[in-house]
Length: 204
Image: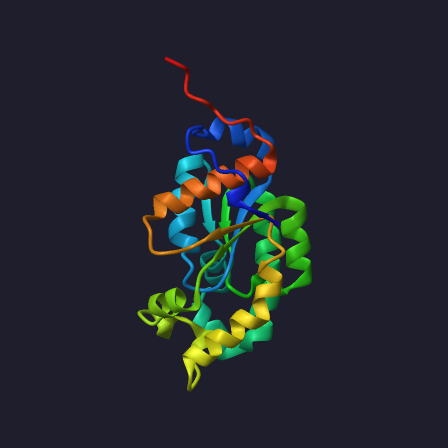
């Protein structure tokens, strides 16, 4: 795992042209808990790099013909996770792209292996308080939080999943700053991970 702080040269802006040849057919895969901003940041990251953005949850809903909440309600989590793994494996063949995964996707060992083989993974990490503030606005859309104590459930999920998230190639802190700032940190981190030379401004 590489923290973006190890590659931080604000005086040397990086371009997509320096990153994409090194990325090849691999995807940039965003992992992390619900509420970290994988979709909103992912869309901006894709636009910045000039590659498609794909939301795995949206693709699962399209394939199933029903919402994630309905899949959970009708078929249970085990069935959902099985379908999720198949969809992500298929999507990873479509790179280069930015791929946002569901919060529990990396629990599956086959999914982690596929991401490792065909992608560069970025863990969008966030403090519990930030997550709770964000998801409380849309908790009815979160099947995993349909419990008597959503906050306790979220804390437990963080404990269970953090070990898997920490296996990502890069870690970026999601926090209350403009999303474009997070995108810039991801681009810098990916460039460093891939060994892209910084694009320095010409000296005057």
